[in-house]
Amino acid sequence: MSAKTVWRTFESCNNYSMPSAFDATDTNMEYWLAEKEMKDREWDITYIRKHFPHCRFRKFRDLGHGGLAVSKPELFSKAMDSIITKQKKV
Image (cartoon, rainbow, N blue to C red; front, top):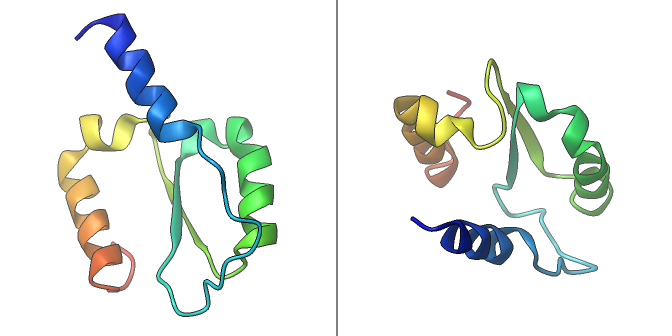
């Protein structure tokens, strides 16, 4: 994969507008982050808590940014399944 493809993928996934208002009371919203990226996500966490107070934060231990699917695919799969089916935490 070329560096240009990687950059375009990143740009398309991470640069989009968030709605100013959103009724999340009847949704199963989660914000996933890796333990080693907590400091880098401080602004994002503050924004999400302010605008989406029903959002559940899920921190994955011993991982850096983007490490869940690559390093622990079984855990990633279980976590995805749990939010899709609204089950309790993995």
